[in-house]
Length: 184
Image (cartoon, rainbow, N blue to C red; front, side, top):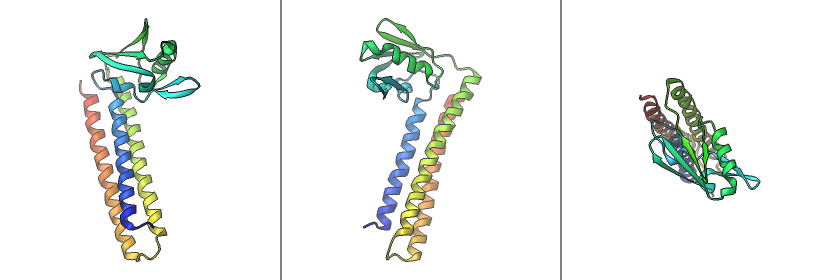
């Protein structure tokens, strides 16, 4: 049996997941220096399916402007290199024996603006997730039996407040990452 409290709790959990997912995406957008989790969102076509980078290669950052990618299966080095090259990160990987060196291009003004666009897309995805959670909870509230209209209205106001809070958290994270990207 659903109750208003359960619906609100589930909604907050969904909103939190949406914000956390967006923050993880933000961390993959490169600022000034190399970070191994920059490549986490890249999917590599391997063995007939698409695997996340961290499941098919070890990524390290030995220098501030270079990533080293070591595929777990040396025979798949070309597939890993291709996935990095075709990602929207604008990287130019080079195979060097059993490893892939990924030098990070210097950040010019245009590159920064492109990365900010990617960042805005991730932020919008997060906002959509929060809105979906609110809409889903609102639909569940309307279907509740044996609950007064006033209780439902009060819960909807609470729902909107939770929505606004999570959107604000997302905006704060997005603005901080944008500032980090635009800093020369």
